[in-house]
Every structure is written in C-alpha cells, then in structure tokens.
Amino acid sequence: MSELLTRSIQDYLKHIYELTEHGQLASTNDLARALQVKPASVTGMIQKLASDKPALVAYQKHQGVTLTATGKMAALEVIRHHRLLETWLVQTLGYTWDEVHEEAERLEHVISEEFEARIAAALGNPTRDPHGELIPSEDLTMPADESTPLASLRPNQAASIQRVDAQDPDLLRYLESLGLTPGVEIEVTAYSEFDHNLTVKVGRKSNVLGLSITSKIFVENGK
Amino acid sequence: MSELLTRSIQDYLKHIYELTEHGQLASTNDLARALQVKPASVTGMIQKLASDKPALVAYQKHQGVTLTATGKMAALEVIRHHRLLETWLVQTLGYTWDEVHEEAERLEHVISEEFEARIAAALGNPTRDPHGELIPSEDLTMPADESTPLASLRPNQAASIQRVDAQDPDLLRYLESLGLTPGVEIEVTAYSEFDHNLTVKVGRKSNVLGLSITSKIFVENGK
DNA sequence: AATCAAAATTAGTCTTGCCTAAATATTGTA
DNA sequence: TACAATATTTAGGCAAGACTAATTTTGATT
Image (cartoon, chains in turn green, orange, blue, cyan):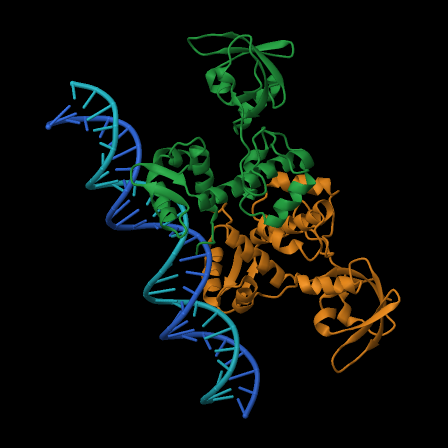
C-alpha cells in the first residue's frame, strides 16, 4: 500500500512542496485552490496522507501541512519529471515555453525511471528547465536558489533573469515578446512607490512592469 | 459525458479492436484475459460502452462485442499513439524493441494531439513501428496488411519478415538474437507435419521454430 | 470576554471501475 | 435430447477521490 502513489497523490505532494518550499505551512484553502478541488476534498486527502505508513505529510488539524522526508522525496521526483519533460519538449520537439506546461503535467505521472534517465542523459543533465526553474538532481536534492524577485530591485540596479515563475501561456508569450526570458540582462531605471511599478530596460527598450509581473521574475547577481 | 474516454475505456477499445480486427466478435472471456480483469468486470464495462450515446461498441448478450464506427476511431487513435510512441522511443531515445511496449502503454493515454503530430512529423510520418506493425494514418485509417504468418510457409518458400506480433521482452530478445526482425529475408527449408516446426534459414544460419513462434511472425512476398 | 467571519473539518453521497459469489445461459458430446 | 463443462451475467461490495451541506475551530475585533 505504501508504494502506490496515485496521480492524485502525486499532485497533492507536488503542490504541498511548492507551497511549503520556503518554510511555510500549506493551508487547506491554498491547496484547494492550487489543486482545483474543494477544501473538503483536501482535508480528506491530507488526513489519508498523514496516516499512511510511512506518512507523506505532517499535519495538525486546522494548522496546515508540510511534507515529511518521504513525502518530499516523492514530490521532488514528480517535479524532476515535470521539469525534465518541459526541457525536453522544448529542445527536441520544438515546443515553446508557453506550450509545455500542460503536456508535462500529464506526462510527469506516467514516465518510468528509465525514461527519466534517458531524457536527462540526452539533454546532458540540465539543471534548469525552459522557464529557468531548477531541476531537482537525480538523487532528489533541490539545488539552492540564489535569486531574488525582480520586484525587489530599485533604480540603477542591474541583474540577469534567472527564472520566471509562471505557467500561464498568455503571460509567457507576453514576457517573451518583451524579451524577458532567462539569461537576459536587465536594468531597473525607475520605481513608482505607489503602484510598485518598475521600469525595466532590456537591450535598448524599456517597459513598465506591474508587481504581478515583477514578483514572478527572479533575478540574480544584481549590482 | 460522451467525450471522456478514460484510460480504462481506451484499453477496452484497443483490445476489442485487436480481437475483432479480422471480423470476429470479441468474447467476454477473451477480453478479460487481454485486459487482465475478471469476466464479470468486462460484462459491466461492455454494457456501459454499448449504452453510451453514441455507442462505442455493438453488443448482444452472450454473443460478444464489436466496435461501432465511433469506437473504432477511438481505438485507432490509441493504437496510433502507441505505435508512434514505440517508434519514437526507439529512434530518439535508444530504446530497443523489447523495451518499448510497457512505456508506450502508459504514455499512449496521456499525450495530446499536438504531441502526436509533433512526433509523427519528427519521425517522417512512419507507417510501421519497431515491430513492423502498421501505424494507423492521421485520419485514423488502418492501412491494409498483406502479410501472412510464417507458419503458413512450406519448404522452398522465401519471404521477408514484415512484422512480429509479440510484446514479451524475452521472446523479442530471442528473436533478435536469431536475426528474425522486420525487413529480414528468410527461407523455409523444412517442415515437420507433426509438431508444425519449421526450419528457417536467415543469412547462413538455420533455426527450427515452433508454431508458437511462427504464428507470430508475419511475412510477405513469399515465392 | 463576546462576537463573528473566515477557514477547516465532518458527515454523508456519488461515480468509476474493479472484485467475488451465485445464478443462468450456451455449447458440445454422448 | 440431455447433461456436463464452459461462458456469461447478475447481485452485492469495496476503494479512491471527488462533491455538498452542516458544523466546528480559529483568530481578529470590539
């Protein structure tokens, strides 16, 4: 019984990982929103995962959940699958970064370890996916992320884009049209303290970006 | 409701297609064996598929089932996925023909039409998979198969192997070790009418093959 | 401390797809 | 033509994972 991670369980673990990545507890409501499911369903599943042996999540009523070590490994496995698949869809089948999420979402649950190993090798064991997200290593360790949100930069600070934390195809296409993709060098030239808009220079063009965008772009090596 | 073909339904349709490919009716028992499920479960599913609107199977109690036009399209779609996937696993990820079945079996249910189109294009729209099985065309037509079982050949008849109707990895590796793979030219040099063994020459080697093997190898262009 | 809204949980249902056991139908053979 | 063997169907259940409605807990505010 302890060895069967259903698709549904894998999805729960993946989203709990993402919601607790920085030490928080994941709330029932947040999980319900992420999983597109009603809160009551989340409570039910959470309780099952907590009472599994070995437990996959640690849970106290009304307090939220986190992953156990076992649950975290399982989550990282799914995330590794997802990010390798995205990378591979882009590199070998010509998908664009706005098209890969949904496909990877379905494939991530069904590929074998053999398949994972083969695409990882074929891609040269990449460490980031097409959005710049870090790919958990083969031993299921998540590499450290040094980046900060673009939103935290202020005028005269320069940086390079590391990753874009978004899946919405429309948003991704918009960002691409502005040249805001991983690896690109940018510089902040203005900040509006009322709406938190940033003016960001990419190459010779500048754009004013709202917080809902600047909080999803992560940069590094600012100066 | 009529648009949701679950994994389980796809498997039923695929196996019904295979069991009825040459005009037969598929029996409850045969289906149960193919699907690794109890006969009672087959009856239940069959009845549901027959009463769907539009019906996916045609069914009369105690008589067995066949596919309706709708069911046949759905089955061919799954089979096209499977065979394209097998081809692509072999050609781009270095899988061998004995390793692909299981992986394709899981992937076939989750890939998008977009994905199907991309791998078909990347492979140059192949018409046969690594076992030589015909791949349904994009418009869901199964090409005509002209081949006959190797078992039907007699001494002094030569032919070329078109396809091998087997998934068992051990058997596939064995056949490969004998050089009995699609495209290979063979010649029958002896027949034993009691056990139906055939002696088959491949290149400069000969092997005696039993009916359980010769009935799974299909050849063409005998003379 | 009392109140109240938001968040979470419980209780009870539903659907899908499988199972076993028991009943019934069909078939082949004597 | 009848009976045994085989096939099929019915009946009743179970597990997963979702839902709705009702209830409880929490915690923020007075």
